[in-house]
Image (tube, rainbow, N blue to C red):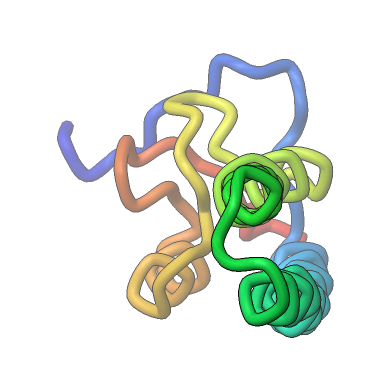
Amino acid sequence: MQNQPIVVKSPLLPMTLDTFKSKVKKYRQYEMTSLGILFLGISFLVFPTTILEDRADRVGFDTSCLVIAVVSGLIFAVVIFYGVARFPQKRLRQLGLICPNCDKPLVGNHKTQLSVIKTGCCRFCGAKVIDSAA
């Protein structure tokens, strides 16, 4: 009884294996693009630092230097939070790579992805997410 897949609560039909692999490939491309944007953002963080250093050399570390440091740090923290925490979850949901039964990602680490490909079921709840008949 425990080896039978759980029936998915969602009205969506399970996807085919080829569709799943295609969506995983799209998500991996998205991850690489996001990583590039993250590195670009980190490199742009150098700009306020150079302004800060120049100003501190000329007039000393004053209130303006503190404001520049705090504001640039906050902007950077917000961008990192959304880039790392929010956007990947949204993209997984758009691609249909979230289990409709337990709401956990069907990809992530290599073990989770292989488990889904091998069994056709969610690794966490056992819901059938890949249609093996197709």
